[in-house]
Image (cartoon, rainbow, N blue to C red; front, side):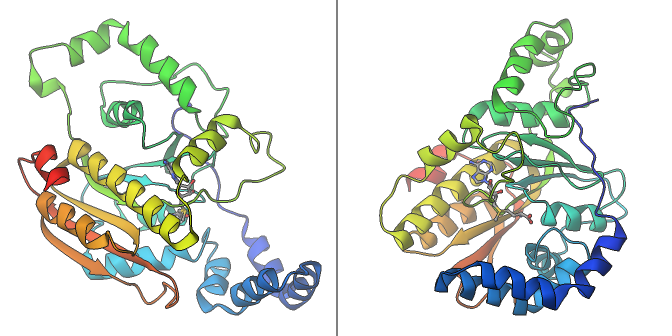
Length: 321
Ligand SMILES: C[S@@+](CC[C@H](N)C(=O)[O-])C[C@H]1O[C@@H](n2cnc3c(N)ncnc32)[C@H](O)[C@@H]1O
């Protein structure tokens, strides 16, 4: 079914080519970028141990090592247990690669990103904005085994589904007898209200788009981003934007995570981060703040880990006190 998208990992010869041509490529690329800040950024990337290691291991980005460190410490993924795992802001897909390699083959892994991106092999993906309530409904549908979405339409098998297509699909689904039977039935056992074991969010400013892609100037994508990035002053904006996305991830966890489920959320620190941590403490029995070694010292990012979601949560209480 085309709602589930598979792609293939880079052919292994690409890794070898990368190593052989490494120095030459470095010179060419750095010399093409005149501005000091661009050159400094590129220089840092080339010299960074984790960036090089990610290339060698065919990982989509160095972000993979942050999740590896988080999992080594908090033991989220289980190879011998089927888990439902949601990766928010999954593009370009390094975390999804780690999740896939550390979880059981039967686990259901869904990536959600506002940008179009083909997920790693064995991972499913939708292109949608997590700030939209409809996205939550679609995620719930995905994990509900009662539905097989889009069995015929293969139009977007390489790029995922755009939000409006998913919404059209949802409207169409609501008319079907199966939907009415499951979601309007008094038999609660059929409804999987909170189907997910682990929710991870590494969301932040959209990953640069592939400008050769026909989707690169897609308005649906860019409008949503512009709406979110509406504060002034860079550090303040980074923090405010990050808190908005963290709250969106926390609401997703309140709505869709099973009791005892676990949560990981990237946060750019600032004057509101203690408040966010306080909110996480109301939802989970245990809450930790973790800075992986692979996260650069100069970066303001930290990861908030919520373990063992509480049974009953009063959303109003979480967000008002
Ligand atoms: C730092 S990247 C994630 C990297 C990813 N964890 C990996 O390992 O490859 C942050 C992602 O969050 C996504 N994002 C930002 N806002 C979003 C939103 N409102 N809904 C869904 N995804 C969003 C961006 O498009 C971007 O791809």
